[in-house]
Amino acid sequence: AQKVTQAQTEISVVEKEDVTLDCVYETRDTTYYLFWYKQPPSGELVFLIRRNSFDEQNEISGRYSWNFQKSTSSFNFTITASQVVDSAVYFCALRSNTNAGKSTFGDGTTLTVKP
Amino acid sequence: DGGITQSPKYLFRKEGQNVTLSCEQNLNHDAMYWYRQDPGQGLRLIYYSQIVNDFQKGDIAEGYSVSREKKESFPLTVTSAQKNPTAFYLCASSINRGQAYGYTFGSGTRLTVV
Image 1 (tube, rainbow over the protein chains, first blue to last red):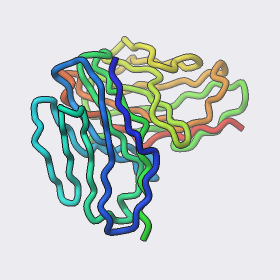
Image 2: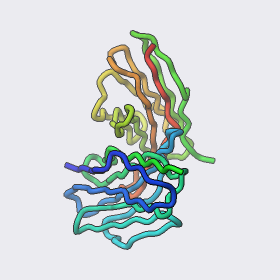
Image 3: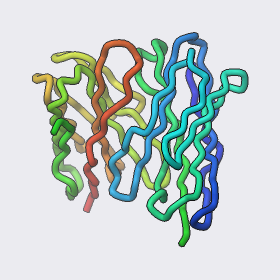
């Protein structure tokens, strides 16, 4: 069975602090894809990044960076110099041939950035 | 621009009524999904469809029904059999070739039983 665990239910930081959101996954497939989505207060989930299981290179996009480590089955997301606009619920998801190709979502981490 | 349109944004239902939530996409995506989100909780899959005229139950299908008569449309009906329908409902779609593609989500419908 597939599983995605986001152990941090809520995180609160002060603006300009760095923050890391954890994501741990379980799958028996050797080929799979990991995703992060952002859900701002408006409600619509927005795709942030995709990483496939064969590419362990870290990725940086502006203030966002992602650290994928197969050895620990983790795909963590770091926001550098957080801003109030980063306040949202962040979901990690896993997709592979198991589970009829449907995505398995974590329960989400609510990030609050205070001014 | 391509995307997913969910309507209405807010919906109020009386006890015992059926209501239908609309989801339309112009992305030419094969697969479509309905999720339910309760306050402070994650996403739970209600139904999904990977091709026109075919759909499968998700984890919490009881009290819901869907149809997929057109590729672009995947309406969700919340029936009176759903005992606790107050929630935020999200529709999503994806390309169905392999698992490399993420989901595109609509802006959601907030359903309240009055």
